[in-house]
Length: 147
Image 1: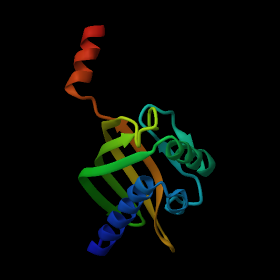
Image 2 (image 1 turned 180 degrees about the vertical axis):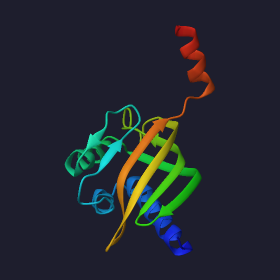
Image 3 (image 1 turned 180 degrees about the horizontal axis):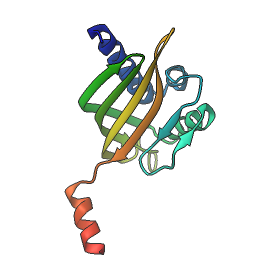
């Protein structure tokens, strides 16, 4: 495992989040493998296959006017032609504007993510993305109150 592999995977991971922030569906599509891929968005079922996964991103992009990712706790492990990236996505997003405003209400969310990359002749490509929401203290209090 060389430092250049880790750097290349970090660049591919960053490109994935930048494509989401910019709403660049073509750039995002180019980052995924052509063969069997999978994705789990927080609260969604497992999506399998390129068509299903990319449709989900098109849907998210079409309903999100603003999104920004601040990645923390990022760790990269490369073994052969496979790389594993774990990170915390600190997400700030805004939906459609209400009553002629420029942007809908901004919402913050914490998601822990695992991104699996495979080395190809064209560089590192996403094989799988899995995001799970992080419960905050207020979420845990609500669950205890309803139990």
